[in-house]
Image (cartoon, rainbow, N blue to C red):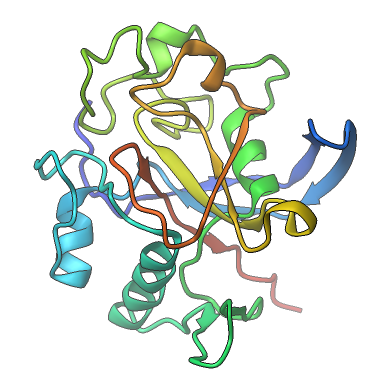
Length: 227
């Protein structure tokens, strides 16, 4: 599958998703408003066009960008928003530990954890939106390396690589009580066992952390209907 225009955004309908936390043995429903999500993880060529940087270890224009921190992903969102004449979603304050999210902004942003899982499931209820080998690059079929985006089948809503290849940074704090500022990672990566590549699996990492199986994809809030 040719990625085509890397900035293609897919319309994700509103819905309801049940999130769960293994530590607290709790689950809770979240209502998700409609939004748009990039059809592919942000690629190295797209990241370079916006930032002028190529931080990834394995180089290739159509490979997902990796070796990027949560902060790098947030800054990319703001830079892309300014590039396209949109209002940046994040206010980056030097004296603040975390950026403020302007929910009224029309610019690009990271998905919330609920948005990510809702988009990944695409109205399915099982652990995955298709047979693992058909939808994801993971330890069992990746050959020990990251793969170009779009090489596996998309889900029903046209989103590729939601599982496997690279983990996706999400906006949310994982568990402030126990892990402080650590942020949520979703989706599994090319080096992971099959059980990590499921729609419900959560991982966490410090927002400054960079590694070769973590990337990100971007979203935009859907515009409000005119009165």
